[in-house]
Length: 211
Image (tube, rainbow, N blue to C red; front, side):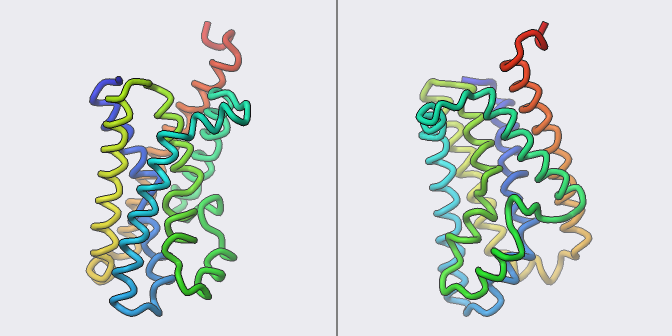
């Protein structure tokens, strides 16, 4: 089990990767033609899907790496590079194409149900969020570690739910500049996290770097 301050760090990292506020413009665009009752259903399915995806990654992600013969250090480097690409886009107040592309947006507009794809996956619980969960899950092996990480995921899901419910109010009171400032702040946190993952992975792959 890690220190409690580490779990606060994990919570902030997950919140930065999921970035519900930064994803709000895309969510608004994809749900603009939906009725109020449909939007409530979409919100519920999105939150449940994101929570399920991240919890599955938490408990079974590392086993999947073992199945494919991928070392955790190699995954740290690749995951760190992925997070860095996301962070660079966020620092420019953009949504990274590793999370959501224009083609996916156009495809989503024509779907009857957009809650699971593309909103929950890959927009919110995409490769970056899944990589972050797997890499932090590897730092502990006792049940307390997994329970507290599960609590972190649920806390992020609650914030996501509150954000989705407050979208009408946020679109009226929060300017695009405000959203961009928050996105850049989350991008800065994410870039530092990415460097940490890459450095840790390289030290594991090349022990001479740790000396």
